[in-house]
Structures are given as C-alpha cells and as structure tokens.
Image 1 (cartoon, one colour):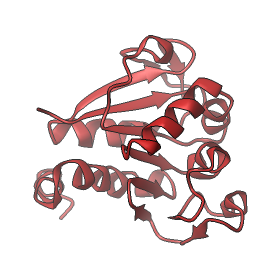
Image 2 (tube, rainbow, N blue to C red):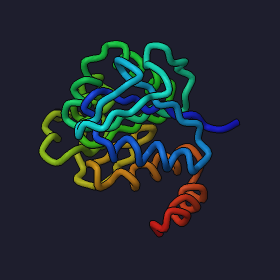
Image 3 (cartoon, rainbow, N blue to C red):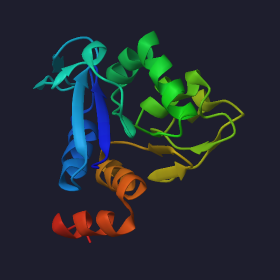
Image 4 (cartoon, helix red, strand yellow):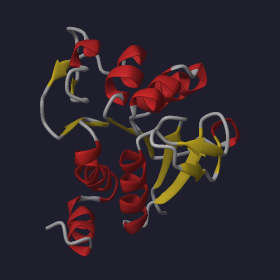
Length: 183
C-alpha cells in the first residue's frame, strides 16, 4: 500500500518549502494530498495563488506524514488553527511522521509540546521559541524519531528527501535524488 502524506498550505506559505516536498514525495510514489487551511485557493508569501486538492476541514486524516511549510505569515496562520494543533498532537501520539520547515518548527510545532525532549532546527534566529526543553541544532535537516525539521527554502529538497527516506527507505530517497540530478 502506498504511503500517504498531507501537506497543509496556509496563506503566506513559502513557495519552495511547499512545492519541493510535494514534487519530491510524488516522485517517490507517495500519495500526496495538498490541503488549504482556510480555503482551496491559497496565496503564497510572494503572491502566487495555488489551488489545493481540498480544504483541511474536509480532509480524511488517515496519513502517514504531515508536512508543514514555513513562511512567516504561513506559519502564523497554521499556528492559529486549533484543529491543526489537535491533528499534530494526535499524529505524534500515533508515531506518524511530522515534518516542518523554516518558521513552522518554532511557530507551529513548539507550542504543541511535541518538541519537548527532542532535537530540532528551524529558520535562523527563531530557535528561542523552542525553549529550554528542545535541543536546537543548526543543521539543514534534523530527524529525531518521527519528527523532521528543517531550516528554510534552501534546504527544501534535502528536507523532502528526508521525508522520503523516513517513509520509503534510504534506497528510494537515493533513487529520487539521482533522478533529479542532486547526487
């Protein structure tokens, strides 16, 4: 059975941090659903309008992974959703993969408490939001158990390949990496 991932877009999302994982995961034959947090039409941080597959509140939540792009406004909009916070906590309790990049690890994940006792990374300068119970590492991508965090747009492909490796194994991640002429 193919793995399934849910990517949630909120107005103000960072384009590369959303599109790179969507593309890379689909190349790995992962079934990706793109959900708009508030609406099916979502406006990125640079004014690109994207049409999601469905609205978040109309989405069946039976997924192997949750992917949360950053972007300052996008992360704040994601963090404002109590429904999303509940999904994050529930998926974490179930050991599902939760992947967040840029501002989202600090702004969206940290307030849910799922980073306590974990190691994570985020956009440079936002690590104080982790508090003392999360160990910050200034690496492009940090994987700690089921949690994958990354720094920003420039680390998006590495971030996406880490999700592929977690869901499908190292061999599949290497295959996709080679297919896109990354390695």
